[in-house]
Length: 337
Image (cartoon, rainbow, N blue to C red; front, side, top):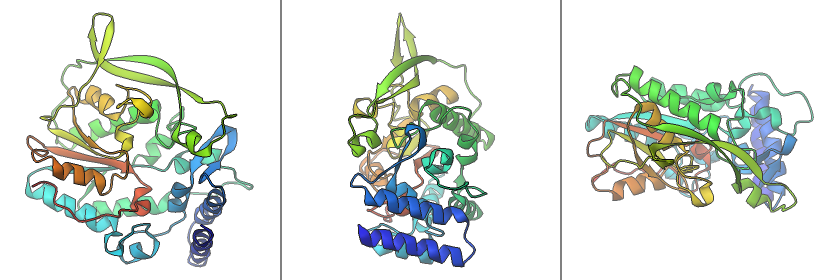
């Protein structure tokens, strides 16, 4: 762990000598602080918690191309480059007449930088500027990218849970709205049909994954308001079921499952698949994993032999930190058998 701390600080020093934004140094120091805690969690202001690996990702200036192998957490250097894998997926989908929309979930620490434990004024500029540079690079190669950071940073309510790595209702709902708007504006789906779904607000207490990692039982659990989507059947609201025959496939990590799958993911019927269904007017298909959305999600897609039948669009949504922090890397895989 100490070697990781030294490496992070070294990267920050390199950034400082090459004109990198001051944010890189800030995140390098915060990542080192999180690394010094056995939990790997950083305590922020006002009860906010942040994941150390996300802070490490934000400390990197360039994590793709020739530099990927030097900074990636991938166990295999040949699988370190996210750019190569994303372009490969796009080419495979193009050959099948299927569109790709890449939707990285911005780092919580970038969207809510005001809650970081800074001992000085925050630097100017976008906190995740290298991520934005990477998205521009992908778009220059023809990949459709939806950069949500500006959208989520402007929200009047928190986009992320205070004690969890995942987004909460305002962030989920804005993401669903922007994804649907992007798909319609590009002509990848038709105009919205009459909305068959209702939404119902509920207040719940969650056991956040960062709260669990921190292991401080004296810290009161977070209470959040969610929006449950479904069809009204009498007095009950029945959640939307994913549709394997939907023209839209939602692929990725647990940002597609939180508040959707229930259990330790907090609730059912209030996640991204549910709100995207409400925005589009029809249910979507879902292939999502609790781990990394980089390679494991695509492996699950490959295991579903009929996964791309009826598909017009794949929305690949995963945590932006996985661009550098995925231990399994970005393995080249066929999208379907």
